[in-house]
Image 1 (spheres, rainbow, N blue to C red):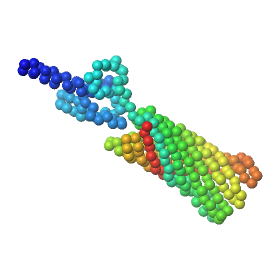
Image 2 (image 1 turned 180 degrees about the vertical axis):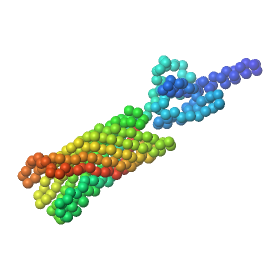
Image 3 (image 1 turned 90 degrees about the horizontal axis):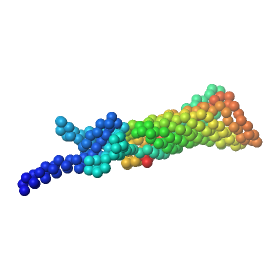
Image 4 (image 1 turned 30 degrees about the vertical axis):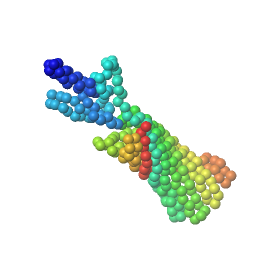
Length: 277
């Protein structure tokens, strides 16, 4: 009876590690059995036995071909090379942002002092915007960027400009998580359409419309609030130059070629939220 009990205990001792063992297969097709202690957004924590004893390590998704919990307890094993569990992460990212904007265009010589003061009042404004992107890997995403900026000033009661800038274009996003996964650093670049509109008043109302090729580059850092929610701040440079406008006012509707190129370049200081879906 004692011998049977001893054999039974030995069998249980030998089988138990396999019953609860997980498996991890790397991109180099190396497989290791052990125990997955944590499964996070971009990595897993893994314990396994080696000749030196128990070892703990972590592996990033980019290094993993597939993994499966309780792999040896499953009666069905996939074919060689078949992915049992796809390493995944949040693919869709949605960003909404807003903040302060400042136009970098210089004031040309020969402008009157009153006009200079009015133009200076059009330097500072605000912007709002949104980004939606799809992550093709943990670090790189492709998507669409949109922003709206407004600058306005009224002088002497008879001179007014309300300038609106609309930008939309495809974008590339690059991000990198910090070691503790509390912060995410990001870069983005975009090229697209930059629209210009000025609803002005000089004794009589008028409207100027135009459009040009625009560029946007930015950098930012996000702080994690919840599993899929981040709050961040960023700085971006938006570039564009206007050469032609359509003028409407005082009974006229005509296209005008500007004598001096109108710079639409500005910097944006933003704050906003990002959702990972």
